[in-house]
Length: 467
Ligand SMILES: *Cc1c(COP(=O)(O)O)cnc(C)c1O
Image (tube, rainbow, N blue to C red):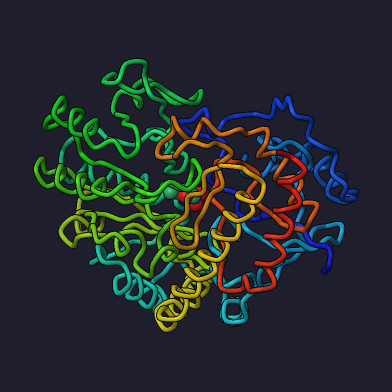
């Protein structure tokens, strides 16, 4: 089998910032990170050059490999499920630009659409028909979306949705969950305070106490805690924002009743329920986690897949809330490049494939996921290991802990040194995993039988070596 290693560099996103210790962990590996057996001459040279002109050499922190150590790979090209780095190594990619590449890299439909648009100019700053086409697709696919506004990133989507919820309700406070990531907006970069009912505190220099005082934190999957928070702050809570499947502390599914409980609480107290589906949207079902679990939020944030690999985010939801945004409503939100035609073409190529082929795409992803999961369980069993695997559809995590992982606290029981060793072992075998234990792996329709075999075989060897 050709030399492969997997590594996804491209769209690093979630990552090192936010509320967690989890995301800001640096490598202090007691277990030696084995010097890579790969010859990474070019990547090393580029990384060194990048350090002089880009902070840390990267444009998004998770790309720097801080939590696994070693040199980040510089990528030159990718096609289907495989990426090639600057030194000519080929890797099977389980990052997929951190989510967007559900149909694989350089899909001809996306490439063709972008090329065609480029020739008709890349931006006008005026309305275009393709924006309507994409908005219609989103509204058809996503249950909660009556109307949708395009922005340029997931961060913009969540910031805008929270502002809208605050404007619409006339309230200030936001409830979020420990270990959930909603981009780098100031009032989301908040860590839990010391007592269970205390307010949050800034989790990054530059975030003010003023921001922190309006953000309340609850443990993921703990509906009783949320209920107590809501009752303690009656009439102050504008919105509850949640990753309906957590993906930024590794993959953690919602426990039965959790999302339903949030919906009920929001209904009872006139709170806007926001699902941050930047990661899960179009990934776990055509209509995202809300379709998969049958719970409809008031507002939904989208990103990643919606842009087909170009920078796009969006927020949408109930008509009366969305009409509260400028120019129809008083809540201001704008963007010079929002709805950019190049990005819309890539997004449209991707979403229209989803709409047309969803009856094959999602069962196929489920089938690959189930086979990967069961193969990994067999590997673990054969080696007498009882690590935890969480999976929902085409997102998944292997945690190096024997405890069930249901929230941030249990996620932190994982052995991150062992993950780092696993990551580098897999990389040497040509399998590119996310460079952090606390990022989910993603796969797409180009991950085939051969990819599956290669992954499981590599995993068996690597686990045997490191455990
Ligand atoms: C990636 C991500 C974001 C941030 O999106 P960016 O495009 O990186 O700004 C927000 N929320 C979730 C759930 C994400 O996974």
